[in-house]
Image 1: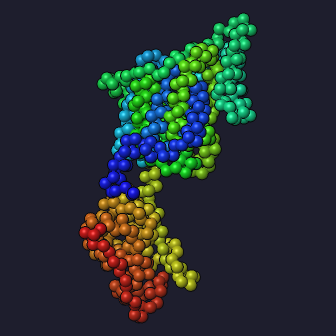
Image 2 (image 1 turned 45 degrees about the vertical axis):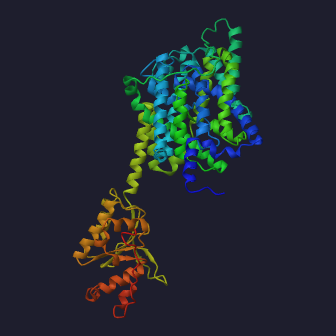
Length: 604
């Protein structure tokens, strides 16, 4: 029996509050088996990634694993994506480090407290954006901003691991430039044993990615680095430079409480927007990519709420900012995941695995971790899209380079906001200059189809202009300037409006003013093929009474015939242009002009 109209809203509300109602019917014994296998694969992969990302974020290693537990479960159950896996990521980790390292010592309990509070605030903001259905906001972060940011972040990740990879001291909190200076000043002091461990890790990871693609390269690289360190420590006389991560807590994520004091919230407020935008952009972009491959329809607003809930809940279970992971989401899809149970089960399985493998982390050298992070950094740089952007678009190149340089030399939240502002600025610059093509009949064409006019072609009394773009407040100046350069006030102006999708009040006032001024000077304004939405605004706003309903036409031909019927024939007697067919038929009777029927203001 079909659902009644009153039952449909309640059903939609139930799916918003508990999204599994929308996909639970797809769960079968076969899909559950496939989801559990995919979840186990994802849990194994996140083990080395979580430790690596925690190092990037300046957090104790175990917190990277905590970020892959509760957030992954909550995001999977409350999101709309079948394959998105949430947890710690490189981008979120590097932004966290950039924001918090000036406020507290990385790795300290004060630093961890700030990270958990920031996670709570980000989750609250994400949830609010989802409830307000503002999922469209992520569209304002262009792909060039993301590429520029991640490329800059990649270099920052590598720079932050130089002291671990080479065994040289680098002052805490050094920026990118000073880190490189410290490296070149201490080239002669590089610890050969530490560098050997890091180099072996790096080489093993490269070889694994090239010839063993089915095995997670991070696991192979860490195993190779750990084995190399063990051999060197047992054979070398002095291997004191080789330090280790230390044992991890073999327990489920402990309960935690964010610090919501006014001073802490004020200190973190400036970074919340940047982290929220970055995390949501990353999650939605990945979810869309997975949806395209699986043929799924995605709800961006639902994903906003899911990401917000995952970070809110995660902040109470020792997890720092989590978002969608491209590597783990892609792996989840390739491993055969059928429903969100796969991503949820990966978080549950990870809790179990941590209790088994956490003590083994005391064998992991810092140099091996640095080698793995070098590989992560290299993988972040999207060389293909960088090359395409540099070759294809000057504007996008400016956005990419500006975001990249700001990421390296400014703080990361400013880099993201700068990229967003540049993207919006360039978009507004483009849309504020609609393309205007002046049209005339082609005398060489048998049916005299309209073509672009040269400077000397147009009729001195009738000008036809096709506007491709929106008529809104920022575009009025450019449109006025172009029209004034070609059409005197006494000219009969015909605007082909089929390319105008949107008109705001400023645009409507501009059209009404053009109609009034031209009519007073002996000319007129005619609109051809005006779309329904702009026409409705003109009617409801009362602008149609100034423009005149009789000046709306379904075609250029009918507009021209109507104008010729109104013009004084004496004005054309000495004209030598003879642009229109009507110019040669001034003495012939004209066919009646058909004016399109328009809805009344009340009906519109």
